[in-house]
Length: 262
Image (cartoon, rainbow, N blue to C red; front, side, top):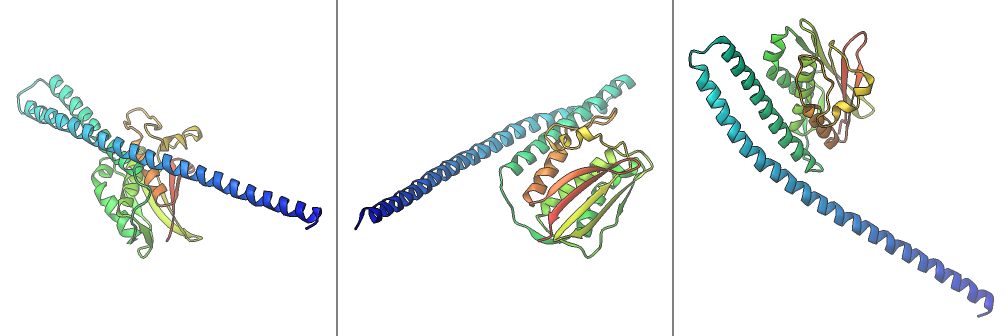
């Protein structure tokens, strides 16, 4: 073997050695990332358990407060006292709502995926509308379901929470005597669902923020925590989809959810 051949062999050996070293470093990095992910999952699960326990204990105390409020309402009280009791009752209801939504959101962040089944979107939306009829009737708002009666989607049954939260949000921020429209279309293997309201609308600077925890667009007289839209976002993410909000000209908002059909 001459010197030139030996040099070629040595260079080839160095290339192989470098390739092995690079792969080893990559494997070690991947292993490190996997260990960190496993640790994070364990921490998230512990956090969910802690939230569940704490929330359960708080809910027990809140239930006792509710019972005392109902008991006091049976007495003959002055109107100003009754008014205070009604306010306390509303604040307690808000605490319960926050606790339930916090537990729900924490559990959604503790999982990476869930089972999906084929469901009729029109029927799913009809069920959501039925659960919100009383709230819509109080503001004389009509909800129109314009979805094709035969449109099927591949979702987990929890997806109804997305529809309910978006419709509830639309009712909350709509003017009295208006209407809310929900429709859907198939686009390039995806299903795009739109919830249109004709209410106050959302400024551009809030369009992304409102999907984060405890972020919401404030309007006088409207209460909320922002957890509802955070739940919507997480459920949509678990369906490998996207959610965003657009302007509904001349006024109002359009919440858009896009998920893969299969």
